[in-house]
Image (cartoon, rainbow, N blue to C red; front, side, top):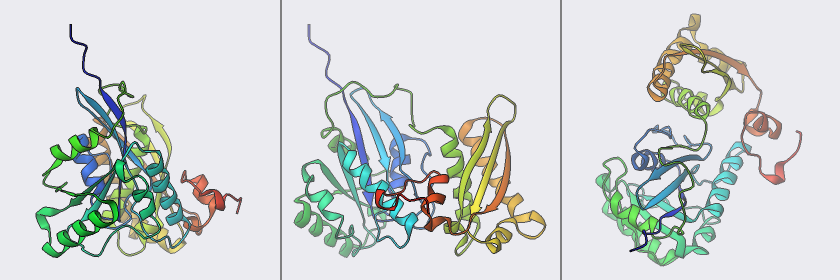
Length: 305
């Protein structure tokens, strides 16, 4: 009697510059909207973990914050989280943008890929909107820096994903599945609820507001109908609070309506969304504020300041 084929399971980190399409790809591969997606750079601030289970393999995808040159502490937190995810992964998917020929990972990050080049798959995304010079430039870069022949994919059109999955699964260790087969995500529902509120902020407001705002779920009660969610939006200045709320509270009301609809679609339940706005001065630059809001603080910034 033939022994059943061994399964594979492991972690694949999605890496690349901001707006390269990592979140869109995660959602396409998992078949569920887990990562928020907007045209704005730096949409992903914390790693988002989604699970794809097939009969032969289970992949835990980690959508990491975009690799960039940090300008303040929140950026350093995002970079720290991305680098940690890369170090912990069984395989790395490095994504390049077929519409931006000059955008490759920052020079100081490249060694993280070159030292593990046998665990790295390079994919050039957005080929459905590609520029030939970008394809040539990225292909040359991948072959020179990583001795890797890149795959051409489109996360939006879901092109080339079957070949991509086979390449990634081949890099995973033989292992029993790490999560129940019907699980799609690792993080709790309240994490995704906060992200949906933040996505709506990114869509509705202009200029500095989306980058100065973050969302914390203060209360989440599933026992009633509707589910009660109390979410606090933190901004850095009083003027930003006024813009978020709007004249007579109109802007906040619109934000709440749109975010609630997204949350109900995600959870499949009726939701009462209770939105509040508070000022936490300079939170993006203060270790203590980042800790309070749930962001990782790099070890060299671990202070009470």
